[in-house]
Image (cartoon, rainbow, N blue to C red; front, side, top):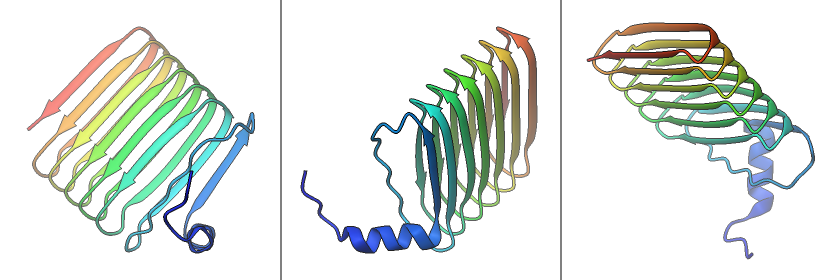
Length: 167
């Protein structure tokens, strides 16, 4: 497959401006990064078959993401400005999605177990969401729109479902 950009420039930029770290089965996996006005994405993966997709646009987006285990999946999308996301997946077969648009939104997700699913969608400004899952087979969804919303979901045990919608 032919490269359509200067890989030497990309490698130097990634080395200086972002942290990508992976340990585990040493299988080849694609990694992409775009550097935009103060945007930071720190991704750490240990284990096997973990996957993270990050899309950040706008100014000063922040992401801290860690996967430790097997077959964890994460998709984080941030648009607007000054949004922050923190995602930690420990265990296996966990899935999370964080989508933030607007300004000054913050999302924190912690999954510790097997087969948990978490989704955080925030639009507007100054929203905060926290999802914590300990156990197996839990599902949580937080949707916030407008201004200064705050939501927190904590799940202990197995096979629980929680949904928060604030408009």
